[in-house]
Image (cartoon, rainbow over all chains, first blue to last red; front, side):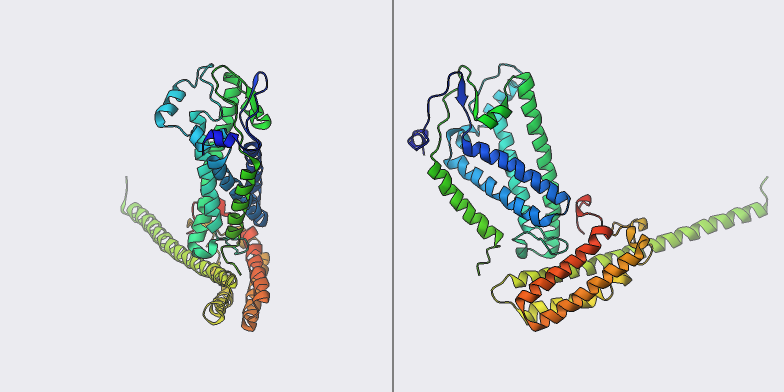
Length: 238
Length: 165
């Protein structure tokens, strides 16, 4: 599906406001902030042994990650993996300009940021999947797919779940440091852009955002909800 | 200058130290064996409860081959729970264990909770015998809560450990 096809949708590109450029659509921003919230709830409930709510917040994370993967293929221009996942040379070229205050401005994720997006999505998915199979030592709130593994395997997965989450926390910390670095060193307010969806336009920074239509989001939401529901039911359809 | 009696005295001290060393060396493996066996039995109990929970999710429950034998494992094993925690089998043994020193510091409370867990596993066996899936689901949850009641205060949190061997 080409960008022009996306543009034919209901929410097709509007002209950029003077001096500003739209970079993130509403679904990307909503998924980002709900993911932040859900991961925070997962973290707190996991540490405080509130496993019932840990399961619910984990399902929310699963929904958001699957939806983000869908949106990475069928979503708005800057959400698509094809628009920001670059070959190693492009990543290295960008990395060389990282310390320059006037490094090339890229609409959406820059090649290095794209790596951290992929890493974070991968780690979140790994945490969720290991959690789905994890066994609770008391047998009260095991993952919905824990029936497919033995008690011992499920306990190992519970530990792996915790371990991978720590790696995720480290990458999130790096992500936050990068946001602060861009703000202080390069005067790019990435936080504001993720809230408002817009950023200051700079010369040579490319086209305005091409927004995918809402029906496509709703269609994906329906499919993803069905998958999450099947997973939470452990695929036991009674 | 050293005389023969000094040699004898030093020799006696040395022999004493060697004997103490031998006693410690003997004690360590026995604690390790005891702790390993305790972990195996408790893991079997966890596995038995899991097997019942998993079976209850299925459309048709295999009472005779899955539910009843596993309920029996839980009931029979829980009868020996309090024998598995002799003094000295905590972290002070130097063996990797989740057992916290509080088990021996608050032994009355620990004993009370272990007996409550025994009572719940007895009830589980009785309910399993009725082959009522709804009632068994509720009772399996009650057994899990009895396990948790003890684990909350007397077992170190999972996330502090590398793995669950």
